[in-house]
Length: 215
Length: 222
Image 1 (cartoon, one colour):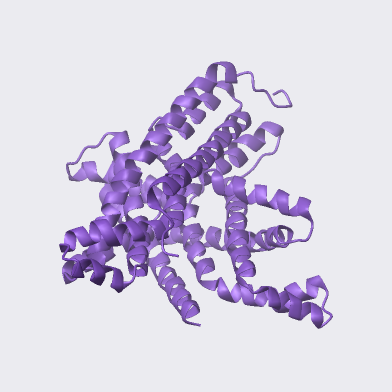
Image 2 (cartoon, each protein chain N blue to C red):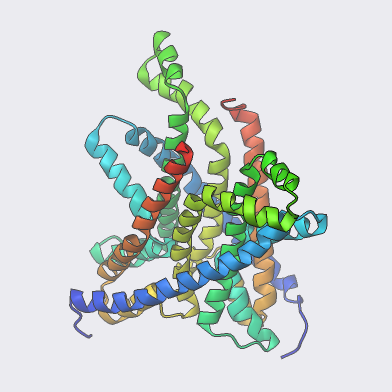
């Protein structure tokens, strides 16, 4: 058994936290890009597109993220696609985030009064211009709180990447636990680190929401 | 390895998957009922007048909401035995899930209680009802009716999150799928069927909850 001081544990975990943050950032950015595309299709004037994206959101909000990750990481190699844990995790979390973000933003779009669209149309804007100049800026502003709130969910969801063998916080904690046999301490520290990452964001989301409610 | 999808294993494996789905459902129902109990008490305490109790509930809610479920699960299952509390996997899973539902639902129920106007409580007190009856019979039912949609989606999320308890070898749906794919070497098909079962469970749960809401809760504040 190797002797680990508290500082050794913390140092190793802090290094691993970089990967948690990086994976969260990648999934959040990817999720915003894909989510925006889903949002456009979800509120488009074509019925078929609306239907398909409705199903997309229902499916990814109605199945566990863990199974999505398993399907990508263990399922795709069956068709000859070799995939690294990092790629599988980033891909799975991006899909997961896109479904939730599209739905959050759609709530914002639908909460706007019909008059906003009419006003845009009466100025002679095309549908695309209306979306870009009138609707989306307001919808994003309204849903800023829930979007930040979802980022917290996403950071916590990256913990599942450990199951695919991606060396982030939880995976490193598993290894440290195996070396030190101090699960109470190791997982306690990990929980504290996640708390330190998530709590400020939770507070920020709450502040944004109350500000929005007052406006 | 052959190309194309092969669902031949379903003949022998489907039963195991269904049993796993039953376990998933059982875990969800248990932790939802226990968690709701915690959340009503927690929400009442959070809006109550006892300062230290308010702070304790706040600490509980925030520490659960800001850490991943899998870390809580590992802390309970691997961490607690080192301080002398040995738990079997199913019990550890139920405890972790219950603590989760309890924390999220406390927030929801507290918001619901805040939405019921003070006039309701005052009117009930004016009728001479005792404080406990006022809470249980007047304020709480109205609050539940308001927050029902939020609670229902929390139950579905809990069911989906329960896939993680496969990591401490609870034989629920994901664990069963994992066992099957390690025998058949058909991970894609196996996880696909498991995902479809989860999707079916979430649709089913939502239907049942909506039915119960219409039957027992009434229209809420309108």
